[in-house]
Image (cartoon, rainbow, N blue to C red; front, side):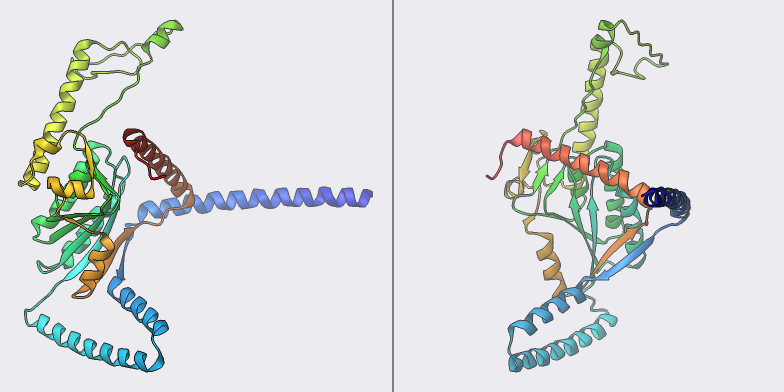
Length: 348
């Protein structure tokens, strides 16, 4: 019995030492990875979606057809490949049907994906011609004004280089998300995609009465009359509130002007009420140009041209990825909760 107790204690000590070593090594690896991540400029990954679609089609066809029918399918495929080869020869002579480059933007409150977006757009600009097209699969409920303004400016670079830009919204492009979408030469939306929300929102809790109740003093010193209009802990004045509202209205006017410049045919005053609409309603109002999904756009394009997905990515250590994933999850939950509260329209 004593032997078993001593052996158990030995195993416990050994396990403790091993765990301690693993923790130290993990910390060192994480620190080294973080350092390399900051030093690395990331990398661009190119995926040939046309080939993936062709492989999928052939795989399904092989399962569905009998042996003779599949042989006939193979013959027709070789014939099409020969015709495609002739088309490529014509392209070299000037008859270029162009290519499609697909990029994704999954927006959060900070529009943190803008760093990846700028790299992807820079890469496309270096190789694209006016015959090429960019398809941006955009999903965003909006967020901070300055970061979404930067994201929209990145998309404007494509138009400045005369590269056609199509924006596809499968789920939501609201507020700052629609600011990005309106830069496109064409906007498409799925039937129940949420579009619009052209407005500006700011919410500031105030704990001044709570502090006074608990006899806690709060001091704030500024230089400049409107350096701080509203505060969370001090006593807000009517003058400060009025100035804050003026700033919101000024931002809203800038938002409206930006949309009017990019979509001159749109009646901005009619839609800039802060409301949002579903796909078909948005089409009727002129917020979008067609009702379809990004999947169908890619399948249609793959019949006539080469389609490539462009993705810029920096591999980050788990210590950096985990907090970002948690924050995105919380933001997504809050946005979903807000929309449910606003609309109270659920399929049950």
